[in-house]
Length: 143
Image (cartoon, rainbow, N blue to C red; front, side, top):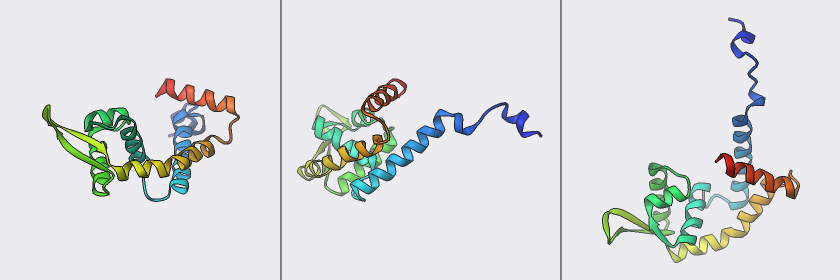
């Protein structure tokens, strides 16, 4: 089979997914370098959202952080083992689990905020301020 007839003009380097993945890899490397090995990006997202919302159902926390049910459960379990979050049955609905940030979790967010700002700045550094705003606006539109 002829590669040109199979590809029909398709080039990996012309695809949005290729660049989103590369940008995501770059951002993940910056995150790991700045934040250290203490928290993963998904754990950080859950902690920050809990710092903002205080106590929410695990299901809502997953929706607010764009994580599916299995992923948010794993994140909450790992954060719970570290004492950064606490869980308890919802008194209004025993089927629902409430997740809340602990004082230790809030302190971890406080320690990480400066690094988080630096991570965003370094990730967007190749762009001028207007391009940075445009990129974020465009990503919000397709997310």
